[in-house]
Image (cartoon, rainbow, N blue to C red; front, side, top):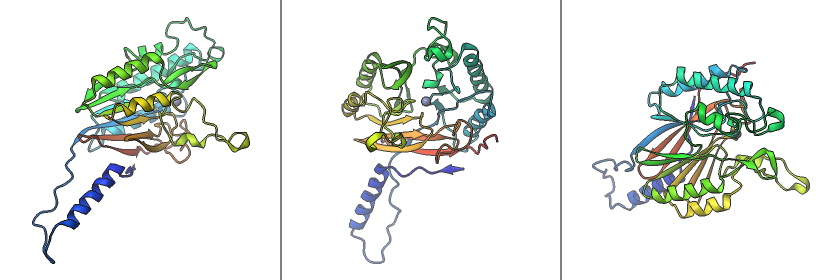
Amino acid sequence: MMQSGDPSRRQLLQGLGAAAVLSALPWKAGAQPAQAPAPQGRKRSLRLAHMTDMHIQPERNAVAGVAACLQHAQSLKDPPAMILTGGDHVMDAFDEPFDRADLQWKLLCKTFKDENSLPVHYCLGNHDIWGWNKPKSKTVGTEAGWGKTMSLDRLEMKKPYYAIDAGGWHLVVLDSVRTDPDDPSGYVGGLDDEQFEWLKADLAAHSAANTLMLTHIPILSVSVLDAKTAKGGDMKVGGGVIFTDWPRIKGLFAANPQVKCVISGHMHRIDRCEFRGVTHLCNGAVCGNWWKGKHHETAEGYALVDLFDDGSVERTYVEYGWKAEK
Ligand SMILES: [Zn+2]
């Protein structure tokens, strides 16, 4: 089942503009235009599938679920040219000892090898990081593969953040998971200074290209407002669900109007925020509620993201028909 995304504000504005122009044309009563008005001039540059939060594991029939999702996207009449993953490929490595983390990564790699022939670009999530919770994972931090290294090795990535060019667009993949400064066993969303400086330089070097950003933890999201209400009625949004360095990111985006859209995962929800010319899209989860069905209102699915030559972006959330194991 496919659900159409809402028309973008840009589309609505374009629609209004076209209507205003048509009503101003000096047609005689009863006359018909010789030709239908020319279609909107934009052309699609690239269609990609954004598959986030797979949380593969031996349980919950998750291997078959990831395979079904990959097959679904490849069998579409208008298939994507590539897959961008959105992080949390594995159920969890953060709290787990080596054997359990290793087993989940093996399942993920085998499933992609067996079930997918599209190009894939990976983005890391918090659950992909091995052992950051040292007490729970029973690690000390000096093990081979500890931290982000295991996921980089398994996914054959050189760095946890990078950029590529495709279809005339610049695609930037961020590493959005940082150690919580107040809790060495935890994490928060955002960029460290080194990555922020890299991003600044990368955007400056590609200022002419419409830019899409991919992050696991959202830069901005509406879904985080389902957070628990704190004492006194204040809402408390934890640093683990959003970019804690939003003020400097906001400034960077203001200086780089070529940044059109940010896609994220982590919330297992679908939402959309517009802020100063940037559309922030949170794109559900392949696993839904960690393979137990819907998470809130969001069923198991992935997003088709269409990028156009005028800088506009359309998102369609695709439910691939998964039935959670009882
Ligand atoms: Zn996550």
